[in-house]
Every structure is written in C-alpha cells, then in structure tokens.
Figure 1 (spheres, rainbow, N blue to C red):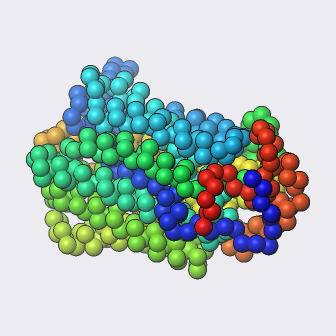
Figure 2: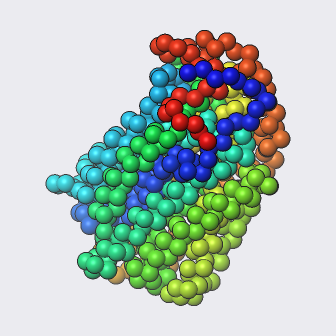
Figure 3: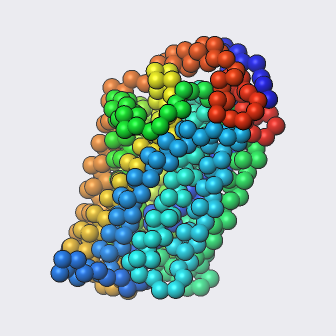
Length: 492
C-alpha cells in the first residue's frame, strides 16, 4: 500500500472511538498497577509462611516478601533495554510494535494466573520465579504499547491526548479491579488482602481482549530510520547521556518511588494508623483511582496550555503538600478522607501521562539528530527506572517496617510505637521524592515550540527519502513515508 506524503499536512488524528480501542490494553496494565502494587505484597506477607536464613539471620514474613519483589524487579531491569532495542530493530508486515504487543498478552497471562491464584506449595522460590515471568510480560506489553502510541501521535499536543486516553483507560482498569475485593468482602466476608483471585481473573481476561481491540482497529505509521546495526553500549549511552532524557529518567524514578512507596504500605496505613475498616480503606483507594479519569483529562488540557513539564511541576508540588496535610486530618473521617484522596489521585494522574508523552518528544529529537528510531529504547530506560524505584519502595519500606517491629500477619496487634513509625515511613519518603521529581524540570528546554521545529525538519527530511528505503528489511512492496501498517480502515 502506497500513499502520497505531504510534509506540510497535519498528522492523522485518531477519532475518539479508535483512540479508545487503541488504549484498551491499558485496562490490564492499570489493573496490575493496583493488584500487584497494593494487594499482592500484603497478600503474600500475611497469608503465606515464608522464611529465609541468610548469613545466620532468620528472616521471615514481611522482610522476605519485600526481598522477593525487590530482587526480581532489579534483575528484570536488565531485560528492558534488550527488549526495547529489539523492538526498535523489528521489521515485519505487522509493523514494529504491533507484533510485540500481540506476543505480550499470552506472555503475561500465565504468571498473572499463578500469582493471583496460587497453585500448590507457595514459598519464596514460587514467588520469585513467577514474579520474574510476570515482569517480563509486563515489559513487553507496556513497551510495545507506549512505543506504538509515540508513532501514532506525532504532534506535541496530540501526544497529551493519546497518552491521556491510555491513562484514563488504565484508571478504569484499576477501578474495576479495585471494586472486586470490596464486592468479595461483602459477599464472602473476606477482609484485608482477600479477594485477589477475582482480580487475577479480570486481568487474565482483560489482557487478550484489550490487545485484540487495539490490533483490529489501529494502524501503525512506518517510521524510517537507519538503525539496522547491532546493539552497542554506545547506543545506550547516547540516549542516557542526553540532558533532556536524564531529567525525565530521574524525575520518573522519583515520581514512581513516592507513590509506589505509599501503595505498598497503603492498607497498613489506612487501617492501623488512620482507623478505617478494610472496606472503607478500599473505597478510599477507589476514590483515589477514579479521580484519575477526570484528572488525566484535565491534566492533558492543562498541559496543552502550559506545557507538559510546567504542568508536572505544579502537580508534584500540590501532591507533596497534600501528603503533609494528611497528617492533620481527623482519623476515620470518611467524607473528608474521600475529598482528600480524590484530590491526590487527580494530581497523581499527571505523573505517568506527562512523563511518557515527553519521552516521545525526545524520541523525535533523537531521530532528527541521529537518524535512528530509538523510542522503545528510551521507554525501556523509563520502565527500568520505574522498576528500580518500585522495587526499592517495596523492599525498603517493608524492611523498615520489619526493623521497627511492625507485624504484617493477619490479625496481628501492633504497638503504638510501631504504628507511629509506620506513619513516618508512609509520609516522609514520598514527600521528598515527589518534590524532587517535579524539581527535575526546572529549566527544561524541549517545549512545544522546540518540538514543532523538530517535527517540521523531520517532515522535510522524510519527504526526501526514497520509497524503497522505508521498508528496508521487509519482504515485498514498499510504503511511502507516513504510510500505515495494519487494518485497511482509515485511522479517522
């Protein structure tokens, strides 16, 4: 299929129904953020007897679970760069990224089933092995989806719209999976971390359905580059040494570490320190998650007017101040707690949305300067920083809780000193890191004006590339610059 290319023409804009369909893989990704980030650590710490003997020390319960989550995420970070580089060098008739996302769903489904619906003997080795396979599947699905999104939305402001849609759908998935333990508690009288099995079934089904909808309705623009070379460490260093990318990586690390830290301790904090029942704590978390729907839309709108980096700076400042204010809220006051959690969730929705949109902008700058498509490698750096941050958040927070004598076992009674220490662990770290994340964008240069200049230069250069060069490495046929791979239907 060949289409004429006009460098002055606007980039095709996905109509709303197709945009929603493209974003549907975010259902399972959003659900996993809640299920794995909030419920699984506590579930395994409180329901399974795990222990390790290391250097003569007997480690049990909450520390062992924290070690498992932390160790696997650190090991898994090595995969992301390899996966990202492989994606950028993929050449198939399905496109670069569509073939990867098609493989990501089945790769994720088995470990999700085994983690949320444990089979047989469950110990440290079981948790470690299935977590590793789970994170590998998440890497493939997430990297392929955001990389695909970056080539669908070429315009600076259109990226806020596309990544905003992905964020909204992710929030819907998180909301759906969060409702399940509340319903389970009402129907079966389960409490705390109970009800994880329904979460697993939801994610297990949402992954293939979401990927199938995206593949059936969305085409992939062919992006020319000359990156048909073997991987070299220099390629990685070229990306990570860029000032704009360094800022985004450090900011993303901090903005993942703060909320991830809170998520790991959420049920402990709101039940033991704030005096909420598990049902009300889940409802408050649901309020936080649901706020991401209007939050993502509003933050996308603000980013179009103020710029992505300025919007993120403002949101991170408001979020940090809110965490400090939490200390002064009356305990077990559900209406006031709901208003507070809605505000915090509204602001937090901008963190992943704007970071990912900015990475796509850097990808355009790299392609202009180097002639190489490296967007998946760039996103791999982001997922790597997130995994390191989230592994650190679970490991460090659980380690500190264990050291201060906090008991995670179901039905355990903690001392006032242990509960007070847990409150400090919950608040101080996130405030510091979220503020640092926003501060990373002071003086950031890649704004809408600079990005428009980059896209204009890319359009002119791409228009001069011979058609035969576009699909170098593909069998048969050629597509002109800007041609689309995928279903025959129009992207509009």
